[in-house]
Length: 416
Length: 81
Image 1 (spheres, rainbow over the protein chains, first blue to last red):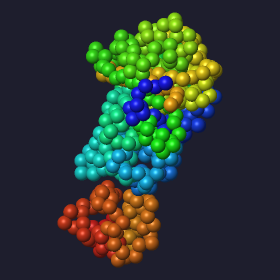
Image 2 (image 1 turned 90 degrees about the horizontal axis):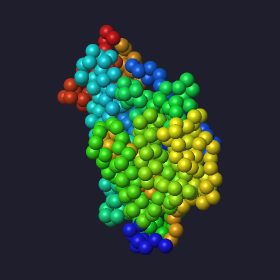
Image 3 (image 1 turned 60 degrees about the horizontal axis):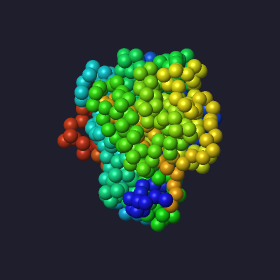
Image 4 (image 1 turned 60 degrees about the vertical axis):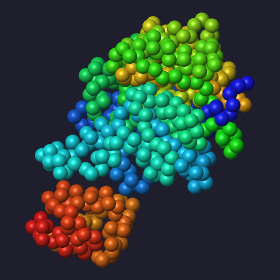
């Protein structure tokens, strides 16, 4: 029995998403349980080819073609996910006070795609800046993807993006929850998104860092925990959740996917790129404490692991420090092995992929592990085929990003 | 370019900028500004610069408020294009 008052409990009442292998939660779950990768080969200017995850949602479902042209890819992803989320949550914006609806979206970066496009465009005109588009500023202001959602749907409450590198999807959710607990809004559209594969820069940078995945078969390129992993697969995607205070959700008889029971975000404070297992473990422990849970109460840990040698091993080190021998019913999996690293969307998407386990009690696996790296040999690591867990009541979702930002969320099965 | 070609070129630009509108249904004197938003209008100016090297100073924007106005204004600079 949860002792918190209902207006201090945050629940998930809707989900809209697009991933490289799915455009709805149901499709996503089916893909994760059937081993369907969403990774393909992308050919981009300047850089050439690389494995990547691209989404194939119908942007015109929620946007006019003129608005797709004028806006950003990140905005289109956000608008699609928000539209699907509103429908799933059964929220009719014409019937609610839109000043009490907020949009809080995590991003890894924003503006790289638009800036590179403009530079490419003026390169056709001898770099004459009079050919630089007047759309550049509204496209690249940091709040742009969340703002595009408010413009599209007439949402007049607060909106902003949350910059938290590859932890942004989780921190978007946390921010939405915090805004609800502050009573700033009654509905929080919260989550994360990424348009990163739409320009070459992030590929080139990871390539220069020797951290870009390569494989003759793109569907095998994202392989966290495998001894032959060789880097990150860059993907786009988005996941937007409807968060509400429990009393509000119950009053309108909303469907409840789960309760956001705990979270923590902290900083490594040690290095811009290299992860810090000790700080990661601190973050996980603090999230558990906030949820009032012990490590053994967690049934699924969705790992952040991206497929880099150092990153995967460091995360496993942190997980071993927290989840001891008593955690016999704690299963570990990885979602990036299916969809690559969706950057700002990663944590939000990966959590969504696990949430149906509250109903089907199955843990989706991490795929593409042909030879497990001993440094990553966690107990109950679900490899290549789904695992029936019997019962799933709590999911812990890891996310870690550059500049040492860590964010962990815990969602538990809803019980009044 | 003939006036007819200029008219087609303008409709082609308008269609690229806002493909949701049937610009061919616009009469010569119908106002474009009621359908084009301000940022769209700047796109028209940009496309004329990119495609035809025609510079439209801000003081002349009013000349581009109808298809006929566009043809009148662009006839001279596009005469030898």
